[in-house]
Length: 78
Length: 224
Image (tube, rainbow over all chains, first blue to last red; front, side, top):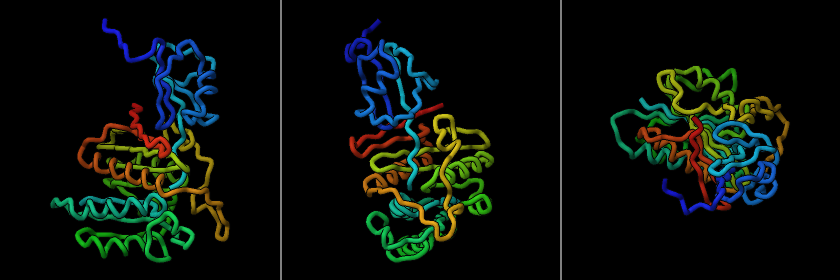
């Protein structure tokens, strides 16, 4: 099986709104990511976290290959 | 006949209307085009910093009047009222392409729920905060949802809106306006125009697109 050498080992895709980032954070929890990446990804404090479309709790431990998205509410104004 | 309705002619809508009308006017085709602008609000001097208009007055009427002079090949109409529960049935109808540029989630839910009962409709909704925002695209064809409605489980703020629509705000009651800037309004208007074009060509593949003007990045999302 071919190995993707472009991603760090334990890589997880982190997403919020338009912002995305690959990071070697497998083994850490959703709460860790919310705290450590909150500013760089502009994560709203109460944003629901999902993986593959399903809600996950803050204690969920990330696995390599996960895509963790913090749901950004739709823009209000127009 | 193509029926295109732009709901809201303010921060996003006023920037969307000009290129949309230009595209419709010169894109050719044998089909007649009717572009309808719907808004119950008024352009005021305080809107000059980020909205496109040439005189004070009802937004729909002022915008339609200006576009009619520039784009004679298309029929342009104006309804100077808000989309509300008691007006939605005569303002919007089956077969419409609706570009929703409103400033509250209550109206987004109202329009999304109404469209779910239609046979076929394209609903493109845009909204923004100070430096970011998104568009959502709901395509329903022959009573089958091709993409997600606006009020879906990924957007509880629209499923259960906590704000009020303009028709619920009483006369003389001033709603504090949050600051906005042209680049964000303009970016969301551009994304809506892209989605309009893609849907009209049969290329649309996503449910929504997020944008952030700080990083100058966009991300299209498929939720199904």
